[in-house]
Image (cartoon, rainbow, N blue to C red; front, side):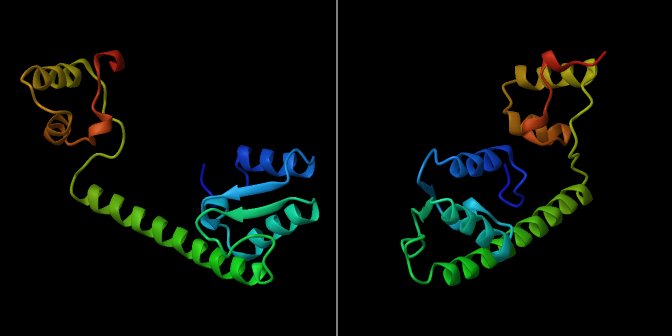
Length: 152
C-alpha cells in the first residue's frame, strides 16, 4: 500500500496494536516508508505512538528515533522531504503515462479476443520473447493475453 495515505488497513492495524500495547517499538526502514503524508500527520502518528508508550526507530536513519532530543525537528524535515518526493513521483508517473499514450502505446489491458490471442500464440510459437510480442501488438509486456484470458 502507498505511504501517501493513512487509510491503509495494515497501517491502521499497526496503530491499533500499538495502542493496545502489543509491542513497544515500531521500526521502519526509512521515515518515508512509514508515512509520506507530510510533516504534521507524520509527527502526529509518532506522537500518538510515544503517548501510548511505543517508541520508534529508523533502520537506515540512526539519528531518527524517539529517544533523541531533536527527534521532532528531524522528523519534520524528513517528512516534508518525503511528501515532496511523493509529489515528484506522481508527476513523473503522469508524464511517463502521457508520453506512452502520445506514442500510441495502449495502457489498458488488451482486448482479449480470439484473434489477439491467436496472434500472441503464433508469435510465441515462433520463439519471440514476451517483450517482442508486446511491442508488436503495442501492449505493455505484462498485458499481453494468454489463452486463459480469452473473451468471446
